[in-house]
Length: 292
Image (spheres, rainbow, N blue to C red):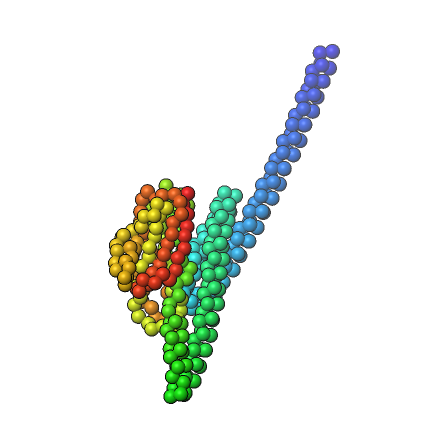
C-alpha cells in the first residue's frame, strides 16, 4: 500500500516537472522570437536612415556645386550629416541609439528644407533683378542714340537707374539663444534664458549698383523701448540715429550674407523691434520678434 502511494507521488512530480519544462520552453521560444523580430526591425530602420542620409548628402553636393550665397551654409550642414552618417554606421543599432539618431536626422532635414526654400527665393529674386537690368541696358542704349532730341527722356531714365541701383536688404532674422560654457548655442524664446541675439540678413545681388564698402546701422529696441548694444548716437542729416551696432560689408555685386551677435543679460519679456539703416539714414529693412 505504501509503495503504491510513493509511486503515485512520483508520477505526479514527473508530470508537474514535465509541464514546467514545456512552459519554460515555450517562454524561451517566444522571447527568442520577439528578440529576433526587434533586431530585424532595428536593422531595417538603420538601413533606411543610412540611405536617407546618403541621399540628402548627395543633394547637398548638387546645391554646393551651384555657386550661390548659401554655399557656406550648405557645406556646414552637409558636414553635420556626414558626421551623423559615420556615427550611425559605427553604431550597433540598439533602440535608444536609433531614437537619438532619428531625432538628429529630422532636425538636420528641417534645416535643409529651410535652406533650400531660402535658396529658391534668392534665385527668384535674382531672376527679377537680372531681367530688370537687361531692360535698363536696352533703354540706356536707345537713349544714347537719341540723346540730342530726347534729353527729357534721358533724364528720367537716369533717375530710374539710380533707383534701381539701391541695394535690397532681405531676410532680416533675429534668433535668441542661450550659450553654454562649451560654446554650443541653444535656441530659446524665454527672456530669462537668453544671453545673446543672433542677427542675420542678406544684401541682394545687384549688377547695377557700384561695388565697394557699405555701412549699415542695426537698431534693436527691447520691450521697454530701450535700445540694446552700443547705444551710440550719430547725426543723420537734420536728425540723429542711435544704433545697437554697425556692420561694414564689402559689396561686389553678388549676394552677401551678414551675421552678427549681440550679447546681453536680463532680457525683458515682450516684443522687440529690429531696424536696419543704410549710410544715409534710410531704413532699408525691419522686423520684430517676441520673448516670453
